[in-house]
Image (cartoon, rainbow, N blue to C red; front, top):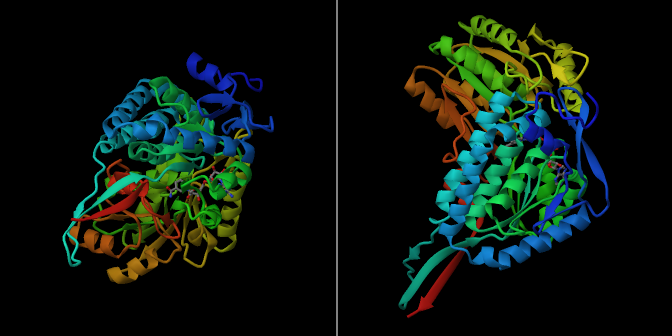
Length: 498
Ligand code: NAD
């Protein structure tokens, strides 16, 4: 296959989109970056360049901010919540109609199995827009009974926070954009989306669909580009009222620092190192495949991936062997092949980073149950890897690897406080799962784990109604649910002396 020749497994529609010209969307017009520069986009399954996108930077961000401000002050700012909701709903329905094409784009750009992309990436995104469409007409304030002497009529209103920058990583471009764009549109904000430089294609298609369903020009703008240029320009721009960021903890901290210039509102969805705790009474027939899925889904490139597995010593070997057997069943291949259940790492850099962690695990004495090597000549494939006998002194247990590497640890008849302390021994606090048939154990643990999402007898469960976000260095604020609407609005108190 030549560079820029559509992959033979792509449908004509997805192939034509990917082979087309990819520009920035600013104020309703598609244009090249002011610099004229572009970024090569690779298929991580082959390492071949499949597209070129505009490399937007500061000058383009300035134009997008002006366009987003103009749209906010224009008809969009005056549109009723009900009308905004109808538009968001129409958008969600159109995404469902185009699910096949969007899934192919996401699969080839991110290296994920197309069947998963359809149900997880497109499905959860569309549901998020549907859910948030309903909120658009239900954003209200409260009447407040003030206690000062005199007679007053006091109430609060919620107003859109304004122009919002939305910066997204490469692992779930459609979903993590939906988490930001859907509530921001429901709240009446305007958006400047910056997808990751590695995976911008589905966001560009999303923006075309938004235009087609009738969002006014400037309400949704897309600046593709590098983090250090386009992303940094958004984070520090004085014309932006809020930045909603998902990505690594280090970059999240840089974004928070840059945002202090105009004290723009900041929400951060950052890294994770989720513990999974399996008690001796867990239903192992269901639990073992689910644990394997929790770490190997999207090659472990998931902020909530179950990476630290605590297993009761009486069932430790059976669980570990079971997970290794599940790993063998994975069909590793090109995401566009229907049978594929596991794709590659997003890039050569990410593959090498994960291999370096595996090497550190080897040096620090972890026991290799399976995996540990890269695979194939082309693309960035890695074996699913299970390391047993690990502990919190090892970097593989402490740091976010963002790859298909599971670290297991046995626990004895410790009290739940001791186990909770071990599970909480991390700078992150995004998610955790508890596996037991005992309701009391499950809820006692759920109370003690310091993380934003706790799953009982499941892992990686997401729903538009459930708030999602992190404790500790996993972030600030929550996406999804009613919480998301709050983060895209400002509260105004109005008080009249009667
Ligand atoms: P990253 O932080 O390198 O990049 C994320 C985004 O930020 C990209 O769009 C990038 O271009 C941009 N960026 C980079 N430097 C920037 C800067 N100085 N200013 C502004 N923007 C900048 O992260 P990544 O490697 O793309 O993604 C992996 C990370 O994302 C992991 O740490 C993972 O845990 C995290 N993540 C978190 C969640 C969550 O919801 N908590 C979800 C998915 C991924």
